[in-house]
Picture 1 (cartoon, rainbow, N blue to C red):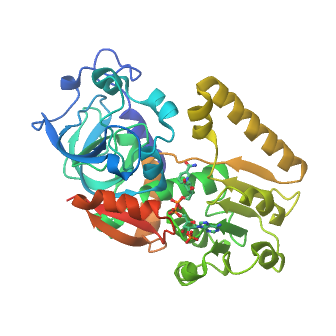
Picture 2: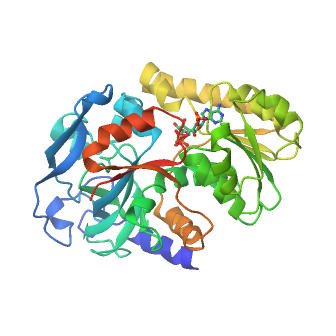
Picture 3: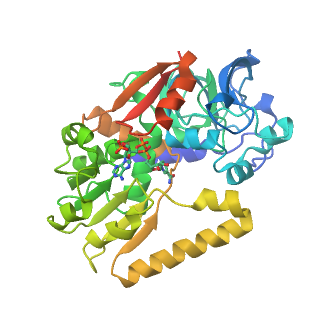
Length: 395
Ligand SMILES: NC(=O)c1ccc[n+]([C@@H]2O[C@H](COP(=O)([O-])OP(=O)(O)OC[C@H]3O[C@@H](n4cnc5c(N)ncnc54)[C@H](OP(=O)(O)O)[C@@H]3O)[C@@H](O)[C@H]2O)c1
């Protein structure tokens, strides 16, 4: 009932209150906000071209975000975090596909995507609401993950759709809260939306997680344990203690000896979550139970890369062909094969907040950086070997 009410409120906030009632086109900005925005510029880390870490530039004069649609909110960013996608986007990954989704107002006014702000996660305070936003009000403490085709959160303020935002768990500081949304929503999408797992059907299911020590792995391990699954985690030896503490039942150290040999001594699995990719696809599906609905879900897909390299039309065709043929091949072998993607959703964040408040999931932060050290935070993330998340305190 509560979820239904939230959905209705969120859905209702999607309509433009003006004459056009058309969300496919932005309305006149001044008509849409509950308060007048006074600032015109703000501090932010931006890039003006794609490349190595040197392209990150601090400016005090980034254009202040405006509410372009009646269901948007402006959030004062208290903390953000760095994900692998930020490092990849800095390098130009996904630019072709993401530019197609960018707001025409931004692309038209500026002529291109630059200056581009990276950063997907935000924990902060609502500063301003669009006229049809009913679920939030100025002063609310919120968290969100902003989709990669929007301006990011490594700035003093960010604009987000109310549908992407959720009330921050009260038990978490902004620093802690900023570590979760992007990885939590991606894991939720992979395990629940794509993989069909949930709190009601997971009890006793055997799940194998490849890459259990990073942002997604540390969240997925806790979520699956909260849902009652048996978790086997594959990670480096030095991450074993961390992953065990998060609840993993069995740990496989992929750096000490042959992973397949170690897996052969265990019972087969109902589900594999692959956060590593590359060669893992060649062997991991073998350890699933055949002809019993077992599922292999990977988060490492060639979707954006295909579009970058082949263009939109050929990239989509290539992607469809690859996914179709792999699904078919695995179906013939008795297992389901799926790709999963990050999904922005305030409603799912509400569910995740409940798990956090219940003490079933906690943030795993490896390192925190001040706003002045965003390039250092990128270098940390780029270095790999994450043990949880890298967070940036913006305030
Ligand atoms: N499809 C999507 O929408 C989507 C969304 C988010 C993320 N992703 C992708 O999902 C992957 C994981 O994301 P993340 O945020 O969790 O990354 P992350 O925080 O960088 O963590 C990756 C973890 O994997 C470990 N690792 C590396 N090689 C491994 C191996 N062979 N076996 C087991 N563990 C290994 C790393 O530690 P060690 O190297 O020390 O072992 C690290 O702890 C990334 O490739 C990311 O691009 C996709």
